[in-house]
Structures are given as structure tokens and as C-alpha cells.
Image (cartoon, rainbow, N blue to C red; front, side):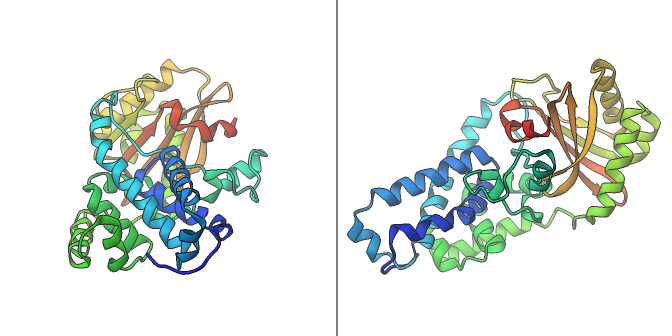
Length: 305
């Protein structure tokens, strides 16, 4: 993706963009950070003469980072076959929440999560749709539809023709089109607040009214936290399950928090974050719940306590 003189010093400011690309491609901040670090290591390993030939170091780093992510996506399916229970993307807190808790320095770009742009392309519903795509579709779709890279440059990442990359993005777009338009943040916040209140009151009937009859709840414990291993289907069953959880966890505190830029809930006990829940809302009712309980995916949320 480009050539001519630029010093190695000019690459430092590219980290934010690379992190945003890698997280959307991988759904894991930890893996995204590793991919970006690997790309920078490859840049630093280039002879200075080669670096000076590169027209756009940022574009070169994007290409390399995307290729690393493509390789990781190719092996992810095998890894997830060994994963205990359902695998969900790593949830992201809102930086303003950290600031309020005194846990983050908004000027500290060394913190990977501080560099994330929270928009509709990191909403859990969107990331879950991305998981249904092939690795090549996901790369073509994210780079073109989210980050507006031309297909000529994406072809360099995927090793395919621009026309083939355009077809991949089109196929991915058809998969993404099944997702409904996101509800407004205010509308979702109201529904999530009502869910919180009904959950705290252990009111099964109220929860059933808030849940779509065909709602699905998916939980990710990764074998490290107790949770249901298969999705719970049906609003009534989900409501009963949520109340059963509350009965078994006295002292559980529910907090309304932004999760991947969308209103969600955080459950903590004795100041320790146990679960981060994301919601998909349509027509005033919850259609999907994604509950992340794997502590390895909640490391950023420890600051909430």
C-alpha cells in the first residue's frame, strides 16, 4: 500500500488506527494488541533503506496488521472448537467510565483500549455478525465498508484481485444485512434500565414482558467461570434463568454501563466485575443478550471496582 521516504518515527501515530482495524477484525483487544505489536516489530526489522522507500508507513503497517489478523482468523475456528462453551468478542468499556472511576488517563495512548473508537462497528451485535463471515469476507468487509479502504489496497492484503475482493465484501454485506438497524442509545438505555430493575426485583413476569418471546441469551465463561454452555432460547426461559442467577448470587450489584458504545449492564460482587452483558433491542424488547463472564476478557473492567 504505497512507497517513498518516511522515517520510522512517523509510524508512532498510526497505532490508534491499527488497533481499531485489528479489534474489529479479531473481536479481541488482547489479540489485536499482539497483532499490532507484531506489525511494528516487522517494521523495525526492515533495513533503514527499505523503510525510507516506503511511501506510506501507515498503509504498510495496515497491510501487515491485516495480514496477521487474516492468519489469526484462519486458525481461530480450530481454536474455538476447543473453547469451552460459546465464544463471544471481548467487551469494551467506555473510556469516560474509567475517567469517572479514576482508572484511566485519557492522554495515555499506551493503553490499547484508550485508542478504541466506539461506534456501531464495535457494537456486540455487529461483532457477532462479523463472526459469521469467512476470514477473507471479514477482512474485505471491515477494511472497505468500515474503514473505506479501496479494493485495490485490500487486494494487496488478501492476495486476490480487486474484483474478487469486491465480491467478498458484497457477500459479507448480505450477511450483515440480516441485522436490523440499531435502536437509539436513549431507547436502548430505557429498556436496559427496566431489565435491571426487574432483575433486581427478581420479577419474572416483568422480565418476560421486556424480552422478545424468541429472545436468545448466549454466555461466555471460557471454562473459567460458571455459566450455561449453550444458548438459552425463549424469553420465559431466559427470565427464569436470570432470576435463578440472582437467587444464587446474593450481594450481586447491577450497574448501567456503556458496553462497546451501547447501553449495557455490569454485574459485580464485592467490587469485582463478574459479568458484562450486552443487549440487542428491537421494538422496545430485548432480542439478544450476550453475557461475558470469562475473567480473561474482563481485565479492562476491573477498573470499575
